[in-house]
Image 1 (cartoon, rainbow, N blue to C red):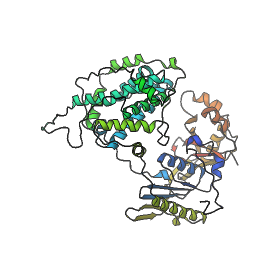
Image 2: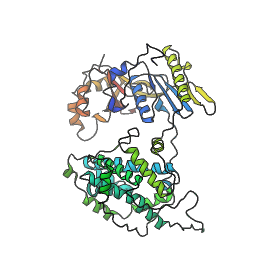
Image 3: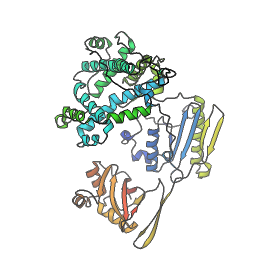
Image 4: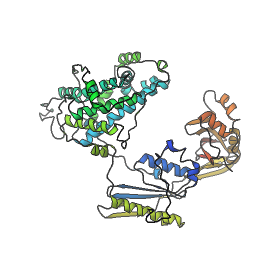
Length: 531
């Protein structure tokens, strides 16, 4: 770009867009922007930027490509709906019974491996942390009868038998995991549904897409088998804060020490043949388990015995080649594929499918970049809404469609205050603007709402922190202190957030009623710190 235009000025950043970078992309950064142009690769990041643009009243020009398909969307403060105002239909999901018992495509085994990754290295660690930190965890767990036993078994494993003290323990765990997933479970499945099984009409059960699997025998000389153990062991070590290793020779030597118990198949084990059967079996298994539940609870270490102890949930990151994430998913998927005689996939192919990556096409990218620039010119020229366009194109079929951006949805609220009828009309762009000074107290804010709007603040929040409530245990005692605090002091005291007084405003959420007690919907409150 600089070769084309020597006056072009750009400052490149490599920070992730999200909550973790808000100290970098603070209000000073946002106040210096005239517009935001996005070219992001996931919905979460788009929604985050969308909300940020709404918060700071900045235009946003979103763009995206999907192979030969491309689209642009114009988001203008006060004039259009936001990116998050409408959503694409959910993607078709793979039936659970196909994933668990009857895969026939590499996409199925990759999704299965991706689910294993989440369960083994993220969700399990998060569940343990919840048990150790939430005082009413077991009571809440008891409300979910289907998953109670499963989660209690998980807690006992991760805080008991599967809790490693060294990386060597992680290697042993990974080797046992191989045996469980690629041998024992397959043996159990074939006992419940043998290769010669027929249905009620005498037709072969294993036919069409249903392929009878074969158990795998672990071979330390098989590179795929070894890669699975290396990746799984290192990820298990990350969860427990232990130092891992890439030394395959040392890992292979440790594998030889692992004692694998002879597998004893479960008698009468049932296998769900479809999703309806699976749901029914899960509900059936939840009955008559009281004694097992109590036994599992009694074996758990008390949270007080592990004060300060936390596991490290692993968040999937496809673009770091050194973190073992794609290594694990590739090895896990290909081993599953070997069970079912499905053609394996390379790490590159696995990364594309697991990360839902569709290769970019230069012509589509060029077209979308040009379309966004056209909309930017319109903004610079100060044109009216009817001149802007949202565009969808598909180069594969020579199709392009342009439409005027939709206006935001407005909400109208009518209420009566002090004998007068009042009306509020607002959209997602609007806020209740409050300019009563940065050191105004909570009591000042309550009085301001009553005097200016004829409304009574029932609850007030900052993010997830409840700053004020007229109801609840100890409300009067708490409010006696809080009403005297300035709004910045209140946020600091309750939300544990240090307010940057150089910021222009704070955004608060309020639940209000008329002075007669009737509920009234209002937009968020913008409490100005600067006049």
